[in-house]
Image (cartoon, rainbow, N blue to C red; front, side, top):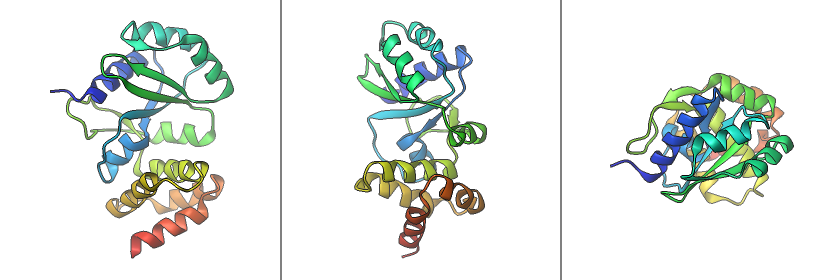
Length: 190
């Protein structure tokens, strides 16, 4: 039986692919694919999407989705995430428009990776290095209080022996997370 989150993700990634919109799966789905699996009730994607594509994406998803084209367009223009809801499963997906150099690097490096969900199609997923950096950024932006984010960060470090630390160390200062990275690596060594 297909996981409800996988069902929505499969429909969403099919629509993005059909429209030629580059994307990657990030967030907890990516950290679960590369680290320690944990339950999540939503999906995060980074997409190279432009304002005129909002209406096309809403139409491609169809009536089984809550997708408000005008709200999507405004969010894309502002460089903010927008939500899509798969009505059949009530699963929420946050789409982060690729608006930074780091987003571009993530899209270039994403690899087809199996997700830890029954029935999920193979799709581009952020690399362990990129999801580690993104989670460090989210942890900082969230006030450094989320135990779930911190545990995901530790899980990524602990389970990825071949982590490209040169790449991580190059991006950490640019993303202003060098101190958090040092703390996470020290915690993982304990």
